[in-house]
Image (cartoon, rainbow, N blue to C red):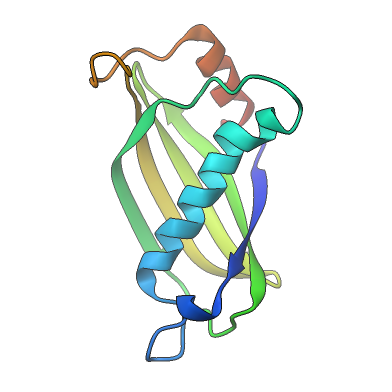
Length: 133
């Protein structure tokens, strides 16, 4: 299953060339990922549990520029693979049904105490499997 989130394209996301700046695509992915791993639980009065993670790698394939501000883009997220302490997420960013970018990130679960990687819990694995494509 893919998770869907919308992110607002602010006027200051547009750069001097008249399109969304490349760094903003990672921001849209980050905000959507936070909603996927935190807010969707919070909104259901559930305790979020997949919160302690860091990005170990991120890559973006820019398909078409986004020239429009003041609108929402659609961000779709799904899990590509699950490792011992990490997992790979894929993202697609589209506007009005047109694909503009594909992203990929490697997330690593971390311990708040040691600040080092830790194995994924069974509960985290079950959640990730829901989005595994």
